[in-house]
Image 1 (tube, one colour):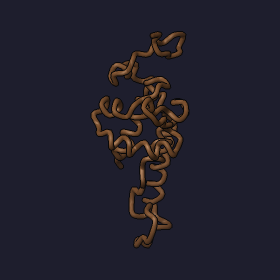
Image 2: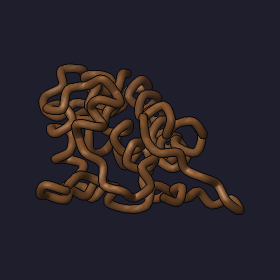
Image 3: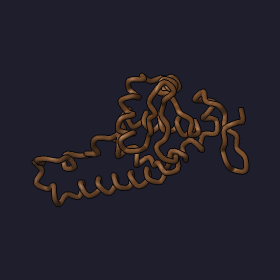
Image 4: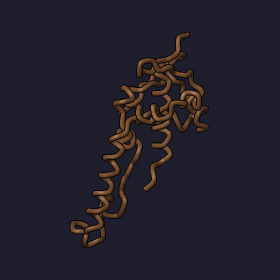
Length: 158
């Protein structure tokens, strides 16, 4: 199984917004930070916005920011929005299946169990976990450094 580029960049976009600490982020800045097309990111924005993971602000000074706290957005939330199918075998797909064992197959049961375990692990990790795991993330993304005081991360004073 392989996640799509859409999922990959959706997670990256959410990480960028989380690292930007509640400030509005502009799609061209995110695209530049990751070396990806702006059009591709705009395409990803729509489903993320509909799911409430990203909030968009229109206008000249507009941009995007997280739709809820980064510690409340799991990787499973993102995957549910960005992936079309998790059909690991023909028997997972909707429609006519030609296999006579479809309702009593050990393979179907094993793959379903593996898929559920995969989803369970994704549900354990949040966008906040990914950002905090890389203290240098702001520097790598070209964002202002965040200061940590008493275990709380804050933007530096201007």
